[in-house]
Length: 175
Ligand SMILES: [Fe+2]
Ligand SMILES: [Fe+2]
Image: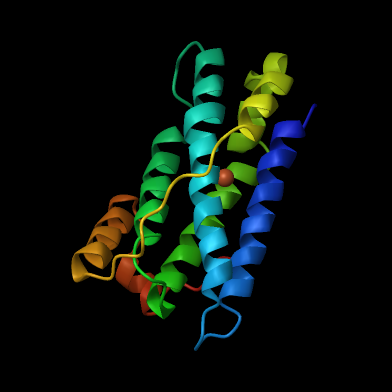
């Protein structure tokens, strides 16, 4: 099977993982230059999935939403809300947990990327062309008002994650 879209998106996951790891390699002193690249990159990645990949797959699926689409959208909402405050240890814990689970659902064999790739195999080049033209998402400065962190908490809980359990270490990162 042609795996160009799978490769495109998983390469981007790895690129974002690396940026995040570089950003947080000194836990007392995050490298904000890397974090900002991660943040704009993640928002662009979500935009590429929500505006191009998933709609094209849905259209090719007789306009029926993909099985996991609703959960992925909730995850994207939680990830986006987590990009608002300046990062700190608890935020990073939750962020990494969701990314790990989310990326696996997209990447696993027979997962969302495989399904999308299969459904859109007649238009792979066209989609890759569109994906390469997606512009960066403009971002605001970080908002450190309590309301921003509370909004992130709500979005994480809405997506079905145990926000406080993750922060307290009840759930280690999945292997
Ligand atoms: Fe995603
Ligand atoms: Fe993704």
